[in-house]
Amino acid sequence: GENVEQHPSTLSVQEGDSAVIKCTYSDSASNYFPWYKQELGKRPQLIIDIRSNVGEKKDQRIAVTLNKTAKHFSLHITETQPEDSAVYFCAARYTDKLIFGTGTRLQVFP
Amino acid sequence: DSGVTQTPKHLITATGQRVTLRCSPRSGDLSVYWYQQSLDQGLQFLIQYYNGEERAKGNILERFSAQQFPDLHSELNLSSLELGDSALYFCASSASPPGQGSSYTFGSGTRLTVV
Image (tube, rainbow over all chains, first blue to last red; front, top):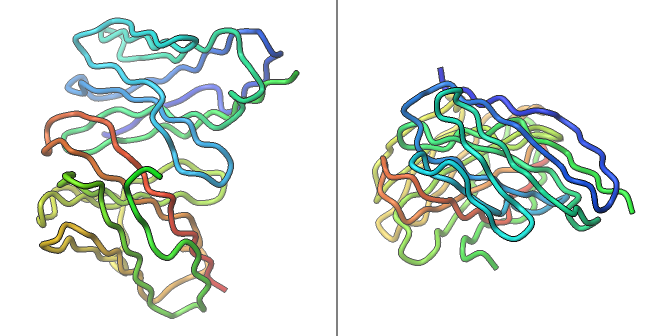
């Protein structure tokens, strides 16, 4: 079925450390994988995305990797800052829609 | 401002009532998606419209319905409301036709509280 699993559900790191969030999808036909950041009480905002013809993509301190064979993709945040604290959602495209993971609450402690 | 406009921002209503949530997509976007986010939960896909036509349905209750109008704005109708319907309802829009992956832009959401 249409399913995206996301781990961990919560993640606490010290400022300056790296954070990694992992997601697994079920449909090998999925070809688009965005990541969204949602701050408390606000709308989800796209931070980075990757398509299935690319294995890795970077944008400053964030990067996403995709392993099509294993059907999983990961978000990497380096040199974390307190303003990175938020809930992060991965998603995978299934036919006409995005199915979201259950979210990871990231807390960055100064 | 994301360009996706949702009204109202907050709605408090009693059980058994009916409400309508409204969404105007970004200029030029033909696809509209509705998601439900309950407290501390993920984003549950409800329904998608493309250029006025329903294209995909998720776990949307029979008490819920939606439509997209010729001017591309969309409305989500929730009826016979129950306490468990209390949630944030997000609308998102996308420029891509169905079947072509592209990012969504989310509106600020409507917070529905059923008392």
